[in-house]
Length: 282
Length: 331
Image (cartoon, rainbow over all chains, first blue to last red; front, side, top):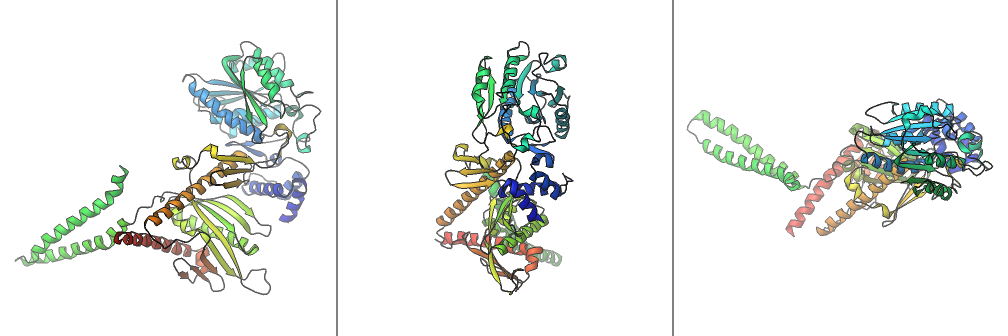
């Protein structure tokens, strides 16, 4: 029975990956985090459904986040640069006067992974995070994740997390509802960056939200939009820091875009050696 | 300051010894007192004091001579690997895992299996287990070595006895925020690799690729970890195992150096040496280092028989250390 499932899974994943994933499935069932029978998990996975949607969770740094279709699943590349960036924001928080809190804006929050990790990691009571997304599904999931991680929407003593339904490429963005998020001290985003015509694995294409993946013909539409926001007066504090995840060939172009807004830049490599995030600072 | 604290027990014992001697002298005079009731009291007192003095001489002083363990606060990291014997060895790894889990729960230690590779036939190829609790390392450290099992496998229709082996390595567990861990390596001595290419990565790929491999360049020690779905978590585990391996190496080196300075030629068991045999047909477990045999295999595997071995080994170790010291003094 078990070995039959392993064979079924190994056909689509290879033996090494199949035995790992089978173990994670079994672990989710044993700890009663999932009520789905093992054979159903295996047949769903064998037809290409992402493991994270089947199990309903994905670890992200020290956090365990809920995942649900079609909201973009947090990637290990994102986890990696976000953990490094969290140290930088923690240092910024330590440098600000004791009565002042930093304001963070996340554009295209998805599961909420970026602001929730930062709110969890940075010393408490120093950071208010504001998360924007165009998808109701995403915002609902992000709020469930905030509750799961114990991060409130309002608190004097703790870091906070709030969500806003908005299209950040729209002309009227940020609009009056985001007034409390201004001026922004930290801007983060993992915007859709895949060029429209690019081929993707079926487990991505058939399950995850295209609105979270495709960034126009070159994949760069959202970076241009973010650069325009950075030039607008009144939105950012003078020493605001920007951290943007980029696709595997986009770091140089995005660096140039951020330099044009008067910022210096550094690039973070992901664990596979790919230029994965561009940090812009004054 | 540390030295003062370490010599405190000696001082206390010595003060008690002096006091007891003085009281003995004073009481001796009263043994010849003209008053009979005084004589009676004195003789009772004298007997009591004599017992106290004997206790100090025979028991308190010798235990003070054995150096205090510097590892008594440490938890342990236990590594089990199936050796020769194929399927049988793998099955016995599983049984040994349960044996150590049972011991840990009796002792009130917390057990966490942090890596485990199962064989297709139900056995366990290898496992790394964290045993958390004070004294876990000192109790388990003499389990390091090759454990041999002799029995008829369920699968052998002819009923022949097979011999297979399991290698056990017990290392001290170094907690993440333990200062001791920081001195063991620097980050530029570490090569960190992730498994396999990931193509474009990022949003293009949602396959879980969390396996990591650490290499400590100066020693060539490598640690691979793939059990967790989070790469971050696997990296933390891998560093934990690396710290334990490095601290273990350091302790072994210190011990070898200490032995060398004592001019003692009796070597301790090498880790590739066979240390214990579990013979199922005879219901027998023998520890080859101290020649101790228990004719109750099931109590070792399932009861408190293992504790008998552990205590005997600790006692043996204390005695050996004392003999080494005395031999050194005579030289």
